[in-house]
Length: 375
Ligand SMILES: *Cc1c(COP(=O)(O)O)cnc(C)c1O
Image 1 (spheres, rainbow, N blue to C red):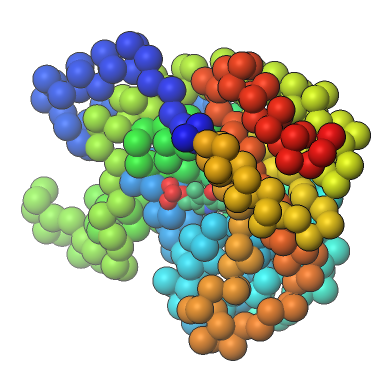
Image 2 (cartoon, rainbow, N blue to C red):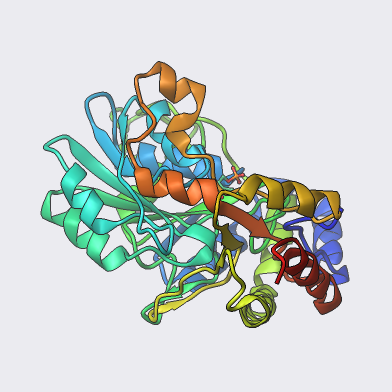
């Protein structure tokens, strides 16, 4: 089965990991520090805190933002459940606002309508790799004293109006799962310009332990002393994973270029096919494309999905609207809340898209899809 996404590990990646395995540091060592510095530089953010997954990164971002019971987080339903569940782990309430019908990104106009006096965070997702309209979303958030979180699990390496993802929101979260734009096997990161938010994210992912003497309540103890001002979790990334990440980050520009070439080939080969809608691209977006999401019109999505799978093409659906899951139903969320996201879900199929996808493999996907659609 041709997968919809997969990693690309080369010999330099293997050598980087092997070097760590025989060093003094398997975790909390120099590779973590260097990976974080490189991530921050690449995203033009003052700080990057690495962690064990994109899910952990979202939890850390919400914890750093200080949200809790009574607070509302506005986000999109067209995402992976972690975008919402991270806020729920902090005790906050999730409010879903609808998407822009063409890009699949959170619609600032819908966010405006969903804002309340309890809104503390607005979380966008850069669907498929294309940045959400972060300038408009940030303007809304800052007007009401809220923060923006950008779930950039899809958009590591993307730019918006010439600025890199990582520099757009108050807090940006990455995922380095193998299908994403670059990988550490499992891994993620939080980027921010704000010293306080970075310190809180860092502390939270180190079990809540503070080693900043200047902030101690009891500063007169010995040098062994440390304090736990609030509870956290162990979400630390190991140096083994960080070494892979540092090596992969060096290859990200190449991955971006290859994904862009595949995107252009799909667009060219599938343009004008009846019953098919191709992804919309904003003029200000320069994405690293994580997905190639097409829309199957005329109620044929299920049939087309099954036929692609039967032909050995490992397509996916991104995403089931988050509030359709039983845990949200049980909390009282109902279908129909965000009709554009639900319609997007009903039509969407993600075609194979990854840096190592060959043009021959891609041509087969195109041929099979055109055949199914009778084009
Ligand atoms: C993959 C993904 C996550 C979670 O990342 P993990 O590293 O798998 O925990 C969160 N949000 C979105 C939009 C994702 O695609």
